[in-house]
View 1: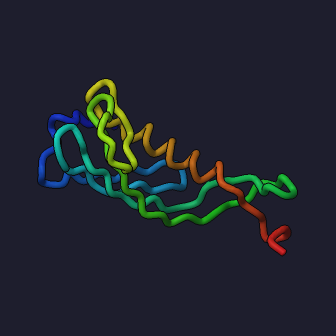
View 2: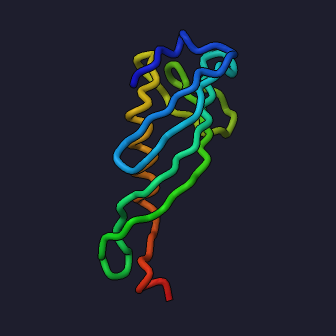
Length: 115
């Protein structure tokens, strides 16, 4: 689902995306010149690999996500989380996949390997 950044105003634009066993729900809201705030909750089950034994298992997640989307290159010196968009759109499906991949890239241990 793509959303044109120029159409996002001070009134929050809500979204709710389902993907397999994951729900990505939140809103987009205009923040300042060229910056759009994304606040969302990522919840559900992600298939991950145990970093010790390599077995696959289901990981229950429930994470609050907050970052900004910049319409073009972000050049400010503020230290904030910014995703740059080069086509003036926020691709929420792509952002969902990116957030899932961030979860998967962390270290995870199955029940047998936690001790």
